[in-house]
Image 1 (cartoon, rainbow, N blue to C red):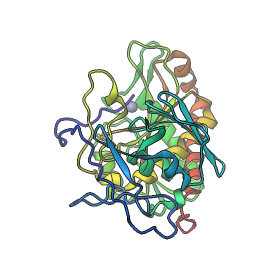
Image 2: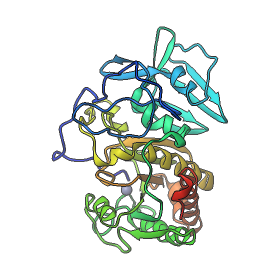
Image 3: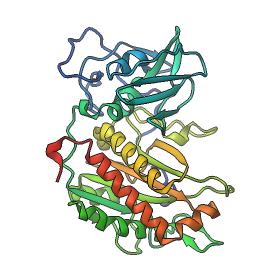
Length: 367
Ligand SMILES: [Zn+2]
């Protein structure tokens, strides 16, 4: 079950994203696989994740966009498509394939579904992608070697089994299934797999107890963890068909939660960067690696890599993801989740995902 986004104690939502205006004419960077926009005045960079000169941008409905062909050309990807409204544009090169569709936030990167913070748009026969999606999501996943901010050395991993105690999380009453039980059980299966790879593992809970959401990232921070994985199972009300696996990272500065685009939802974009935004680029790399490895292991439907202002990821001082392994509101998927074999597969998929993430890190950072 998806955790609630933050409540009223948080900074007010802003309609205009706080992406800095483009600055052109900067000297080219050295060893700069992809471009970087400057920090906003009086603000540290929300994600000092990339190096090099910023591409010129243009502001559309308050969002800073850059030319997609120019941006991805720097990463070795090109396209032969002439973009048109509502049509798909494919960028390929260096073993990567990226499909973007004008006016839609759904994208595909190397066969995996991800949901952009803003829809690409077509202007003057060029496809434009939001600067934040380019620099904080797509660029880092395509070229992690170009991420300027070093990730924490991957030694200590926090596992956060969702819910617990009086908070059962998703419940399938007919099958007598509780999310809190499965989340803990998967974490307990994952822990020895990670320890066997040489990592130290800490758990936010190791029994059936309630832990308030903000205490979970605080726990990780106090233990100086290098990666945070929150484990959940999903549900949706009045719908027994929806199924599949999705993964979340904390929304980059100025971008909206994925569910804030639905009718009647408020724009929850935040003007101020959260501490966790420092790791936007590595969040994206970790989510892509873990999502791909988990799907390959469990064979569920790919519901995508998404962003959201999740309280359990807010304030983290290391990369972090929240994974929704499967839907307990779907009886067929819930019955699968109720088997130890399936939960073992989830644990193995997550462990493989951590290994895939570790493989993207600088060699010196490996245990
Ligand atoms: Zn949950």
